[in-house]
Image (cartoon, rainbow, N blue to C red; front, side, top):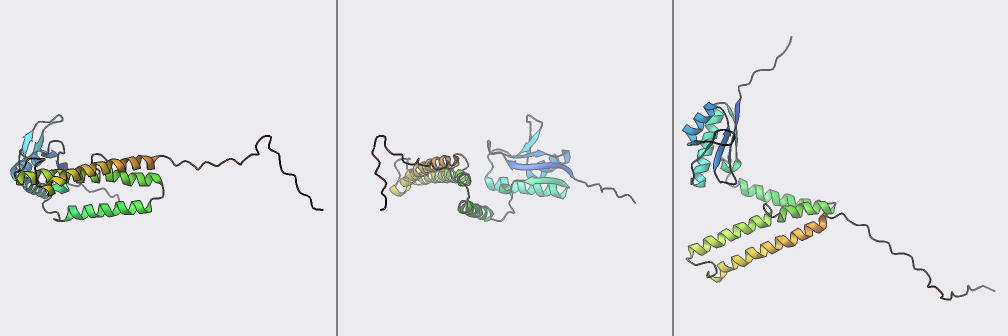
Length: 219
């Protein structure tokens, strides 16, 4: 008896994510039915794109509104039989401390990788994660400090450079983090170089013309 594969009712894939360049929440893919659900349940707007129309949320929405609308639309799409990928950062139902727990796991894994490294290139890989210019841990931490510095200055009604001393030191701390990242990257570059075998010193040779001591003979 021949068995045939069953027919699955899976509609075209829909991806809902946040565009890193524009900050807009966009929905790409799907059928006309998916477009209808996005517009009705999530408030998405149709926009022309280089590869056809796509959907996006309106400009200027607060982050929590973005997350609420994206989560609502994704669950409505799933209920209608669509396959959906929702960016975890937009998922309102995600565990509140999930991002923090993931960051802690990531740091723990980096420490373990550094301890278990058996080659200098493996050490270099860990240092790259720490200090890479865009997505390294130190540059990202510096960005947090800079933004906190600016916000604290605004809240205290002070111009940058004229803040209370504890807040002003945030600026110098940000500069210290930048310098630390540069130091780590220099170490990374050095560790990434192939190890050179130690040079063997040549055996000493007698100086020319130097008289050699006579060989003693036993009598």
